[in-house]
Length: 204
Image (cartoon, rainbow, N blue to C red; front, top):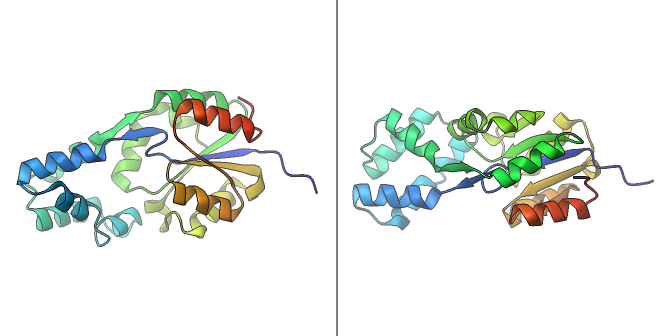
């Protein structure tokens, strides 16, 4: 049987569609509270905090309270939200490519993220309105590299794995996509992505 024509493209968000300055946030917190970068980083990404937050099992308010309790963070909730969401910058090279792809293919977001970040990105990057759907870990209760989230994305797209391309910046998540049968591309920069998409049979 002939291989299906590529119909759908799944995009990771952070590190692909938007640049992420998370280290700057860690340094900002570390300087504010007088602790090391490593301690702040370990707390912000602690599995008892970030994991349930990204799986939709913890509200933003509870995540904020967890940071206040563990780090003595002085920001109130409104201050926290503004700074927490301030780490993103649109990758215009990629979003311009997305606009071109949207004239030929159906596109979808597929991201490990939390409710604050996903709502912020949707609100502040209007060019992503071309996405047919958004699969966010916090909304579906599973996260990459869990096979279930890739299978759910394919189910909601209504395509088989051999009819879809998946783009991510993290090698282990790219490999997880390949294990499901997706044509997976590791993102490095816009020019490389365009080249690799063409090699995968995508018309740009």
